[in-house]
Amino acid sequence: MNVLAINGSPRLKHSATFHILEHLLAGMQEAGAITDLIHLREHRILPCTGCFSCWIKTPGQCVLKDDMAPLLNKLVWADLTVYGTPLYHFSMTGLMKNFIDRTLPLVEPWLIEHPDEPGLTTHPHRVPKIRSTFLVSAAGFPEFDHFGPLVATFKYNAMIGNTHYLGELLRPYSETLASDDFQEAFQDYYALVHQAGKSLIENGRIDENLQTQLREPLFKIDPALLHSLSTSYWESLMDKNQVPDSLRHGANPFQSIP
Figure 1 (cartoon, rainbow, N blue to C red):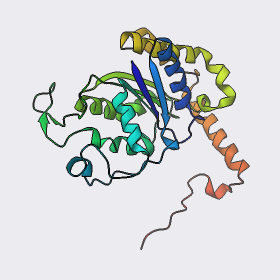
Figure 2 (tube, one colour):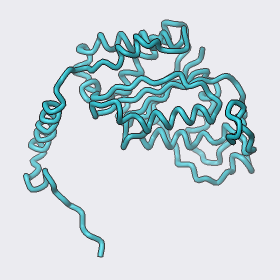
Figure 3 (cartoon, rainbow, N blue to C red):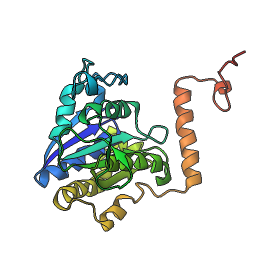
Figure 4 (cartoon, rainbow, N blue to C red):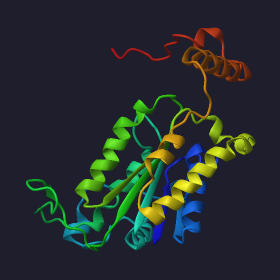
């Protein structure tokens, strides 16, 4: 199986998203998958202009000259695409959204009825094949509920594109996971991630027991204490940057528009 993993984190390799992807792909490789990891931050990808030239002038090819064309080839090559993005405003990063917008050349303009959803309209894919997607996301918030809009988006994109959605690996309260200095402390968690990658290739899913283990908190801590520690952390960074008290709590640096 050919697996393409897309890292949409602006922090590249210094992020929880990257560390999860790294161990997930290692498990996939152990199961025999051929994997490729791309970091969107390292590529020049212009925003889609909505000109539809890839439909009506140069079918299947975008007129924008940047790094997107070879990435589209990788998407066509992949049997499984793993989308990795930190949670930004309860959705994906701008890097990831921009990338997804630019995949328009992969479909044709014709409106057709969805083959598996009667009464729902979609577009035919230029290179029909059995495809699967999987989502990886990390967030600073401690609750899983915040991932709801993101998961719904990727589930719907998979459905409308007639792609098998294999699920998601979500990691709340992940800031410490992003630190290179603490990687050894999370080896037990990474072993589970590795196992999940292997299972996705061998079984096409992550079983319920493993999912339950993956959702266990990295730290068991009272929410009130977590909020207090978070405040102390951000205060310490403001201290380091000599931010005055007047600009810390309830500060409003914005000017009213007359």
